[in-house]
Length: 116
Image 1 (cartoon, rainbow, N blue to C red):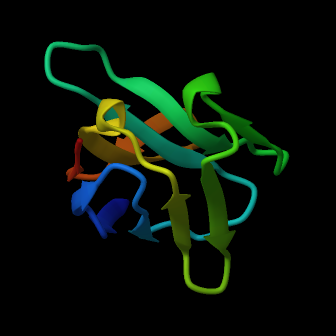
Image 2: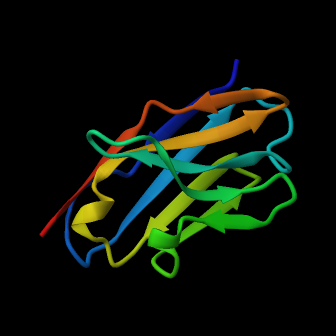
């Protein structure tokens, strides 16, 4: 059973930083999986924030390029998101995501609130 457990959300002032982490369990081979982070703000659709493709390249939303960095540790089955220069518009619930074969798995979400 695939499980994703996120941590690291919280309240921060604009310009501050947070680091989100997600531990993935229940998969045989962590490397080579499409995985990353999405977010959903109140009243909006869930959107991509940052992603590792199965080939290992990274994709970022234009709104976070240069501020957020996605990383992974294949020895710890962990994918992380370093968020710098946070803005109030980054306020959302952030979800960890992994695709295993043809199935999509999501974490429970962690709240990030950026005050102005």
